[in-house]
Image 1: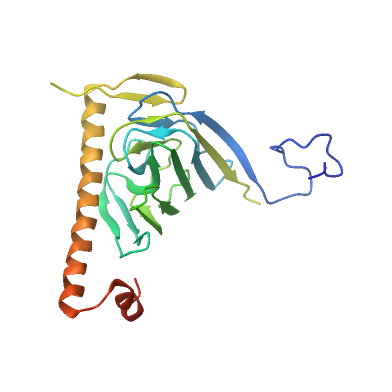
Image 2: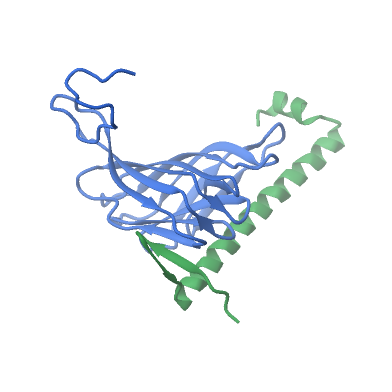
Length: 181
Length: 65
C-alpha cells in the first residue's frame, strides 16, 4: 500500500489527524512475562474514552484452555454467557452468574494466545459490559460469541487477564480506546 | 505446601502473595468447574439424542444449536 497523501511514512498512525473523528487509539502495549499466572494492566481506562478494545496475540500457555478477564480488584458479580459449538460438533455452552471473573473470553495453547474483547464503560460509574468471540485453539475445542456484564457501578482503571489453568509466557496485550466523538 | 505462582503488574513480574495465590487457585478452580459443567451438559445432550436416535446435525436442524 502506498503512503497516503499528507503522511510521510507508512507506519501505523496513532495520532488522529484533524477532521477524522472515528478511530481506535492505542493506549498501552504490555509484553507478557515468563510463566506468569496473571497479568494486570494498570491505568488502562480513564475519562478520555468510554469504550475500549483489548487484544491479545502471540505468546503461549502451558496448558490448553481459556483466558479470563477481571476488572480492578472485583471478584464477584460477573454475569456472562458464551453459546459455543465444538468444532464440527455439538453445543458446549458456558455461562456464569455472580462469578469471580468473565471466565471464557479468550483461547490459549502452546501455539498462541488469542483474545478480542470490547469493553463498554469500564471507567464510567455504570455497569461494565463485555462483548467477545471466544475462540479456543484446540482441534477438539470450541468457538462462540458471548458477552456479559459486571453487576456494579464501580469505576475501573485496571484489568487482569489470567489463564484457566497453567501459566502464560510471551505475547502482547494491547488496549485501545474508541474515540468518543 | 502452597503452590508458587508469579503475577505480572504492567511490566513487573514478582512472586504472588499468599492472598494472590489463593485468588489464582480459586479462579482456576472456578474455570475448571465451568468446563466440567459444559462437558456434563454436552454428555447429557448426547444421551438424549442417542435415545431419540438423532444425529447432532439432525438435532441442530430441529433445535438450532
